[in-house]
Figure (cartoon, rainbow, N blue to C red):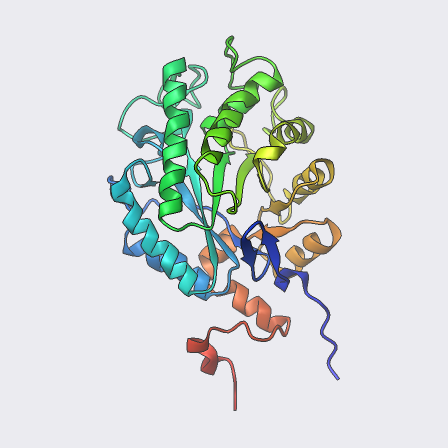
Length: 346
């Protein structure tokens, strides 16, 4: 008799009204495959839907700009215009058909924008590096506009049918730039103390919450460490999250990206950050970071009390990663009907 242990990677997880069939997440990854109109096209449909068919429980669509200058590049998706809804709706429908839940990451690139649609905007006029353009310091009026842009993008994401919403506050983009003392040198109420540096993110979340359906989850992606003296570390990030906890349902824990600095990465290198945030904030977490192996992921879920695991590069390489892991662990009933005959030998 074969003993099948319970494999946590393939247990269900519910976040508000978003039940996931397993703990495998496809994190948002820029595909640089949109035209300058920011609309999702056939590439995006095939790219995301194939990962749904491949068994991922939750798919988070790549950073989608809330405004033209909020894009990381001019080949990013955007959601600043109603004309961008239908393309994304096709992607949503395709992923639902494949059996996955799907969320959208809404984003403003801040000083790291390479879009030609204007001058990059930032909390303070500090360049990311000499290869990047000089950003303009956001005025109060512009700040209000960005908050409104996040809100309108959330309205459109709901219309497109997304199950969840991720607000991008990581990797050195605009919201992260406000959070870190290294990039936020403002002297008004949006800079200085931790409470002031969190203000912009809090206002974005509050505004988004007014239009995003209460039963749908909303979460943020954060960088738990700036890997630089005087920047954010995991203790500061715990404080930040605890100060906005009522506004979010989960935290997607990454790290870095604020300053050009080399980080030694290895499988599981960011899991400890997620573990600390889970422990000290008592909130569901997604861990990420070269977790390219189901066994490493399973260990993180079991030993570190992580809720969900994001497989980035692994799912880029292999859309069927989740199905193959399920087969390896002898999980029944996970093969899509259309493909069953490839797996069952009679």
